[in-house]
Length: 127
Image 1 (cartoon, one colour):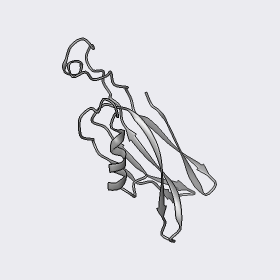
Image 2 (cartoon, rainbow, N blue to C red; image 1 turned 90 degrees about the vertical axis):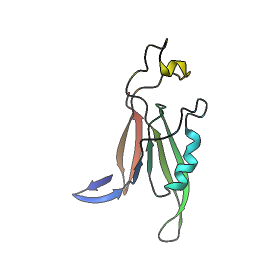
Image 3 (cartoon, rainbow, N blue to C red; image 1 turned 30 degrees about the horizontal axis):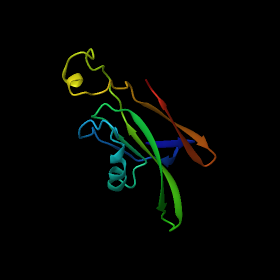
């Protein structure tokens, strides 16, 4: 994603999206995979997954060495997209018999707010 000012690009955000993988982690909701994803995609500003119907947003601050060899802190945005359909009637069916919780429906809205020479990221629930 690229933000523009005066017709010129001024800030770029790198997004890594993957449909997702694995089972439905009942207790961690998949948050434990954040460290693995951060290590595999160290330059991504947003890491977005789906697949397991969990919905959460987890900003993570990391220390990076920039191109001028200076230490800087960056916020990385970990997002898990929820479900877009209800899972049955909660009395019968595959999800109920597996003991899955009712998924939170919807995704996330991301807004980039100009802040002097940079951009602030705002994330809000889109359900």
